Image (cartoon, rainbow, N blue to C red; front, top):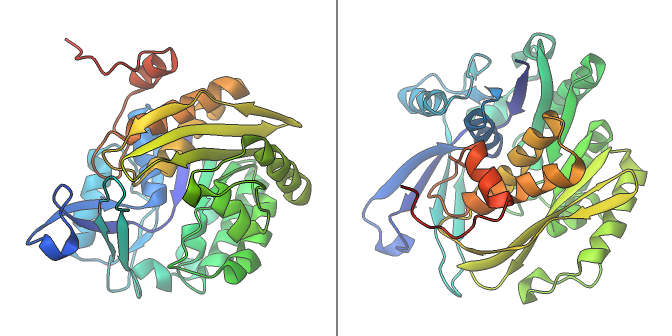
Length: 340
C-alpha cells in the first residue's frame, strides 16, 4: 500500500473538562494533535498507510505524543528529533453564543527551528502517493517555507499528489506574510483546500456576498473564487468547507469541490457540536480518501463532508470513525439511533 505523507507540527493540547472556562479550571485534559497529524490518524482509521513527518524534542512529552500517534495507526518512522520543546495550545470550548477560545504556546517549539537538511525528502517520498501540508506549518518558523518548497518540488518530481489546506491562523501570521509565502507554494499544489477566510487572507481572493460572522453565505460566489484560484495557480481541484455558524453549538455544514470548470455541492448537515477542533482536518482527510481511492468528484465530496460532520460529534481532535460509519451517513442514516 502506498503511503500518505503528512508534514507539520505535533502539539500538546490542554483544555478544561467539559465546558469549563479557563478561569474555572483546576485540571486540564491532555491530548496530542496537530493539523497534519489529525489527517494522518483519520486516514489510518480508514485503512490507509500514513506517515507523520515532524521535528520533536527528545523528551518524555514528545515520546508520549509519538505513542499516541502509533496508538491510532499513524506512522512515525520519519520524525526528526532535536530542539527543546513540544508546542502547546489551550482550548476553551464554547457553547451557545459564547465562542471557543484558543491560546497558543508554541513559540520556540522544535519544528520552528527545523532546517532544510533535517528532512531527506527523496527518502521520505519513497512509495508515497500523496503529500499534505497546511498553511499553519508554513507560518511556524523562518525556515519552514523553504523546507516546504523543497518538499513540494520533490513531490512534483516523483509524481506524488500534493494536497494543501490553507488553514489561516491570525495568531500565527498576518495576511501579508501569509500571501508572500503561500502564493509560491500553491503553484505546486494539486488539490487546494480552504474556507472563505482562507482564500481571502492567504491568497487575496474574497467570496462576494458572504459574512460568516452574520451567518451569511452565498454558495455561488465560491464558484467564482475557485475558478480564479484555478486560473491563477493551476490547481487541479479546489475544495472548500461551507460553514454557517448559527451559534458555537450549532452549525450548518456542507462543502464544494471545483474541478475541470465544474462545481459540485454536497448535501448540508445541521450539526450540534461536541468539539469542532479538527473539523477542517477531517474534511481534508475524507476528501483525500475519496480521491485517492478513485471516487468520482461528487462521491468524494459527499464522503468528505459526512466524515467531517461526524467529527464534530467527537471529543478532542482526532476523527475516530470508520469508512462504514461515514458511508452510512452519506446514504442518509443520520438518526443517531443506538446500534445494537
